[in-house]
Length: 124
Image 1 (tube, rainbow, N blue to C red):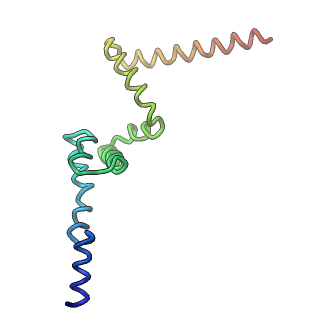
Image 2 (image 1 turned 120 degrees about the vertical axis):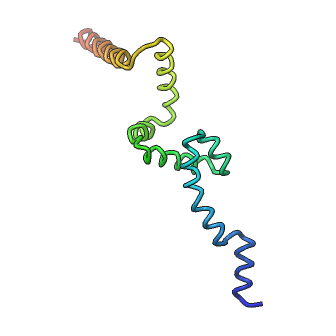
Image 3 (image 1 turned 180 degrees about the vertical axis):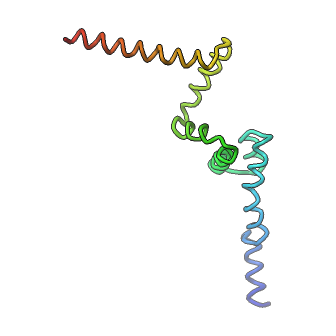
């Protein structure tokens, strides 16, 4: 038995074959195509991906589909996104428009500014 044969047997045993390398290269492509039809959890289960890898691929999917703003907002707020989604659904349930949400945020800022001004008047 030649050294080359032993090397091939060892690679096959530890999973370091050209076939495995080809499969590993195809996984991101498969994941990106599955995101059109499935949520990230389903993709992770289907392809047996770790959470971190799935998240990385999902963000790439966002970028490739021109969802740059969504990606950048998510990078900024991460876990706080749950609160934003909750507020969104509350407003949506009340049939509020995005313009009304914007107006409410402006009003809240004005109230905050008035409270700061009131505190400043008290201290003077």
